[in-house]
Length: 166
Length: 176
Image (tube, rainbow over all chains, first blue to last red):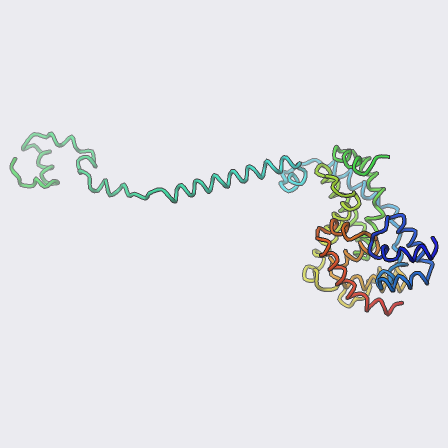
């Protein structure tokens, strides 16, 4: 690429708007051309300063290393229940279904809690206290006791008929 | 030759040969970004491996909404920022990676003096600013693509770049 072409592309170069192949061509030119680098520095100081910086080549073993780890990961049996891993591997419909179950559960919980809170609070023990003691304690069979019997005497003691002549 | 999207579809079905093709195609991009971000070869390899393995795990959920390269940068960005946070929890997004701003011995050995100084200057930036700078100046990607890769708005990444420039320009101006 010629200087004239490169100079026209410097602004697009510094804002990352060039296609990868054009960018590579501009970059290759900049590495060997002080004039164009100076021009780039005027457009964007940092772009000019970093234009000829080299990055070390990709390590030869990198892909093999990644693939070894990938094969190991695929071969590893899933022995333990791991919710996080399950969640990562699950597909979108399962995520949606899980979220729906959660929402329905929360809604039911809220509805039940609301029903309990808004229900009238009565004290059944009061009714028991005011009821007839004979009914309350299931001793109503004593009510038919003949006059003067032991049962009748007991009833006289526990009720307001104490000493009353029938 | 199958497209990246076709390969990812095969990877989702458990095809490791397709995954290997993806790795071979994109390892250079991943390597450049990781190396520039972290400045250390061994750590950069770990980051690249982690990013590709995350892509393998997530293959069944991959949807080609952007180019695969942008997706790779998005995963790599997350891996790099997580790594920076784990390494220096107190320093995340605020303090330099090297307290005195000087390159590590490993960096000194592998880089020329000028490049070591550039890397040291990059290391003084918070993780998100450093990533923005790497994507723009070393990968040459546009604001829209950067926004996709970094999960931010275009304005937000331009602000990151602006802050990164403001902090680096005075240091680098002296080098040239």
